[in-house]
Image (cartoon, rainbow, N blue to C red; front, side, top):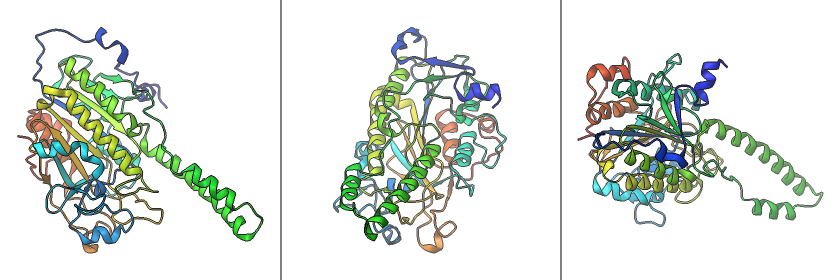
Length: 409
C-alpha cells in the first residue's frame, strides 16, 4: 500500500482528530457563527440491510409466499408491521421513529439504489461513496467533493464518526475524526452456546447418529467461521449498531455546540443477514431497534438544529426477495433509502413500486430499482444545501437526475 493511501485509510491524512473528552478545547464560542446553517448527515448501513423488512410491502401476497419463516406479519397481527399506508408498514422494532413519520419529517424512497448489477459489498460501497457507479478509478468521495464546493476553510466543517476516514470522505478537503464510543464494535453471536452444549451432551456416543451429529457440528462451525469472516469484510470496519445511540448523541451535541460542523457521516455494520435473519424478533430486529433508537436520539439531541438538518440512511444494495435455506437472505438489488429532517416532506413513501411478482423481479430474484440513489442525493443537494447546477455536477459528475423527488420543501 502506498504511503499516501495508508495515511488516508488510517485517518491521518489531512484530518483533524477530535477527542470526545476534550470537546471544549476546540469548540469556537464566537456568536458570529451562523446557527441556522444547513446540515447534512449520512448514515451508511454496511453489509446490505434488508429493505423489504424495513418498509414491508404487506399488501403483496408474493412477499409472504417468498418468505414463509421471516416475513413480518401484517398490521394488527402479533408482531405485525406498523402501518404507514394501505400498502407498506414499518418494522415493529422501529417504533422509536414512528413519531417522526407521523410528524411529517421522515420519508422513504422504495425500490431505490445503485443501478449496477454488482453483488459485491466492496464494489457497491465504493460506487455509492464515490458517486460514480462503474468507475473504480474515482479517487475521492462525493461528500469530500461536496465539502469542496461549500467550504468555509475550516478544518471541522465535516466530521466522520469512526476509526478511519471512509471512502465517501476521501479527497483533498480536511475531515475530522470522532472516535467511536465504548464497546461499539462488540460482535454479535449467531448461535446460542447453551443450546449447542445441550445437544453435545445428548449425542456423546459412538453410534452413527452421534457421529453424524458431531460431523455436522464441525461442518457448521466451519460454515459459521466463513460467514463471520464474510460479515466482517462486508462491515468494512464499521461497528454494529449496539453503540449507535451513544455515538449519535455525541455527534448531535457537537453539531449543536459548534455550528461550523456542517457535514457528518457514520457507518454501521451487521446487516449481512445470510443466516438466522429473524422476522419481528431476532438478529435483524435487534439491529433495527438500536438503529431506530439511535436516530431518535440524534433527532432529539439536535434540538432546534434538526429543523435545518437532513439525515440520509443508505445501504449498498438490498437482499433477495426469497429467503434462503439458512433462514436468511442473500445479496440482492433494490432497497429503501430513508430521509429525515425538519425541511423534509415526510409521511410519504416515494418512488415507483415495481411489485414482487416473479415477472417484476430483477434477474428473477430481487426487488427492481426504479429510483437511482443519486436522484435522492441530488434533490437534497439542490433544495436543502442550495447547490446550483455547476456545483451539483462537481459533486456528482456527469449525472443528470432521471426524476425529481419532492423530498425537500
